[in-house]
Length: 218
Image 1: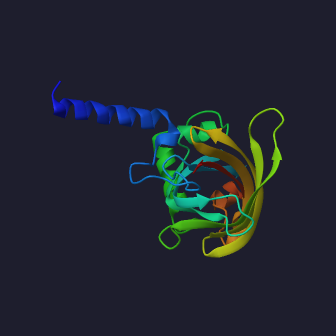
Image 2: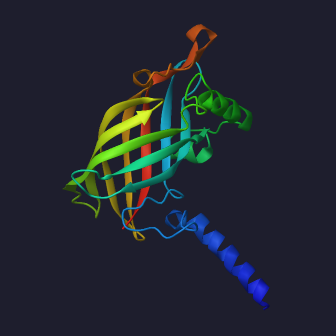
Image 3: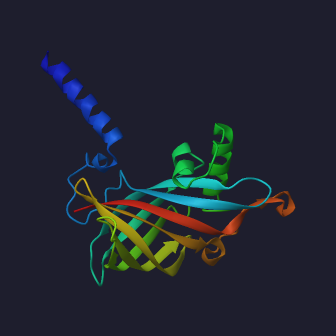
């Protein structure tokens, strides 16, 4: 086999591994050190419930960067790129257990509304930042090698900064701490008005459930 063909085969193999192994994604740009978050593998999911008619939505987005280390002060930060948010992608609906699939046109319309100036307004506020003051283990699972962690800090979204505290669970996975957790967020507390149309007959709930699926290099 020629050298060029070998190189091409190795590249295809690397792409296949990255697709099959989330923990391998996001490392091409540079090596990750302990505490660095693999932004390419990590995801944020949001459950957007409905009011009135319509249907609930599942949203998926990516991190721009992040770092998180066990510490009582200055544990790290997670920077979420709101411009990457997509509504009702099949993987997002599966992750938060919403049945059925949404057609491509509806996905595009809901995504455009979500990113527009009436909701997230990503032109003015492209990022959400969670500054983590402390990240500490609180309880080990008796049934697995996973540990519960408490995260305390503040999140800045849509120009508004508010305190945030929640508990997540994680365990070792292929050289990473794979951390999963969720919390509730009220849109109106961040000066966002829950979307409505048809005089309120169709709309979304004020309270969202945000899920983090984070890969932290060990």
